[in-house]
Length: 116
Image (cartoon, rainbow, N blue to C red; front, top):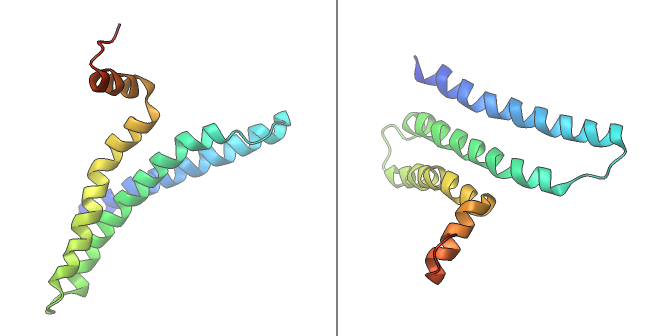
């Protein structure tokens, strides 16, 4: 009884937040007479995708047991496992692509030149 409201709130909060972000960016650009800045969206989209993947994970964890009860299609739980793995790695991937400090650290590790 506790998981469903918690998961629903955890899914609705980013959905509402990202909707407000997109609305505010569009409204600000319209008022200022500016063109759409794709860089602003480039930062918001990965986090929205992370929230969507999280939602898919908890929905499959909740729905699959009810759908697959008494069947031999247990291999479909592999979908939940794959999506859960994507959920676990999505945060790291977003930071690898969006955080310049992390990218610079990785470049220095790869080249063997220490950071200054």
